[in-house]
Length: 408
Ligand code: OGA
Ligand code: ZN
Ligand code: ZN
Image (spheres, rainbow, N blue to C red):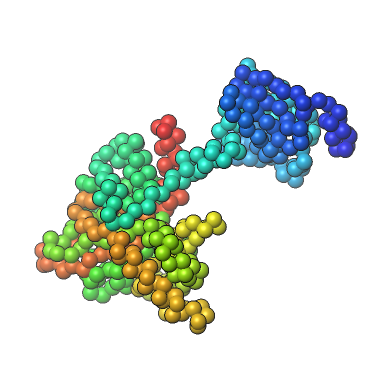
C-alpha cells in the first residue's frame, strides 16, 4: 500500500475524533495528526508522533539490556501517522498501530515521566540531570561549606549522596577525619569512580621543594587560580587531602565562587564581563614530569558561557596564562583592565580557610578559584597535601545511580 493511500485511509477514519478512556488517562490523536494527546486526571500532555515512533520500546526498536535505541533509522518515516489506538494491560497502557505497519505499546507512567511540559522538563533537568547551583559570597561561606565525617560517607550511601549533592550545589564541601595516608585518594576516588589523570599523574604531592616544575610546590603564596586551565577537558573537581598542616602562620586556602563574581561583574560592569567572556586567552603548561616532556596549550576565555549565555566555566591562573596573546592590539589594554576588575572582585568575595590533618577539601574547579597563603616549613613539620581530580561526568553519574538506588 502506498503512503498516499495510507494517509487517505487515516483521514477517512475517525481516529482523530475518537477519545479512548483509560483508567490512568484519556488518550487521543490530535486533530492535526502530529501528536498523541493524553489527558490524565488533572493534566494534558502532548507527545509528538515522530518522537513516539522513535521511542518505541519493542525489541526491534529498543535493546532492553543496554537501554539503547536500535530502531533502523534508514527506514524511519518522520511523517509517521497513527492508524489506530487501543487500551492495553488493564488500561495502564496504550497500543498504537502505525502507518508504517509497526505496533508500539507505551505505559502512561512512562509517558508521564517524559512529559514535554515546561515544568516537567525543568524538574527533570534540575532533579536528575544537574542540580541547580547556589552561588555565594564570603559572607555566606561558613553556611554553604557543609562538613561531613569521612567514616559516614564511606559507609552510608545517603551521606555519600548528600556530600556529592552539596559539592554540586555550592561547589565546595569538607570531609573530616579521613585517614592521614597519602594512598587514601585511591579509596575515595574509587568510591565515586576514578581519578582524572593529568600529565602530573593521578595524585600529586604538594610539598615545598626547591627544584620544582610547578609554582604550587613552592611555599610562597599561590594567587587565586583554577587548576589546569590549559586542558580543554579541564578536570572537574579538586580534592585536597591535608596530611600535615603547618603549625606556623600561613598555609590557609582561599576560596572564591567564580560564578558568583562573574554574575556580579555582568551586573556591575557589562563591558568588562563581555571582554572576559569573549576574548580567548592562551593557557599553557610547558615542562617535564618524570622524564616526560609536556607542552599543553588551550585557548578559552576567562569566563566561558554556554549557548544560553549562562556562565559555564571559569579559567584564571597568573602562572599558566601564556605570553602569547593572540588578540587584536586594540583589545589588549581593555582586556587587562577587565581582568584587574574581575580579580579584585574575586578577592573581595574570597573566604579563607585552614585545613587540618585528616581534612579533604573538595571544590569545583570549573567554578571556584582557589589560592593559598604562603607559609614556612620548620625542620620537624613539613606541610603535606595530596591533590587529585575527579570529573563531573563521573560525579553526576554516581549521584544518579545513588538517587535511583535510594529512591530519592
Ligand atoms: C595547587 C594548589 C593549594 C595548597 O597545588 O594547585 O592550589 O593549599 N595548592 O597548597
Ligand atoms: Zn518497535
Ligand atoms: Zn591549585
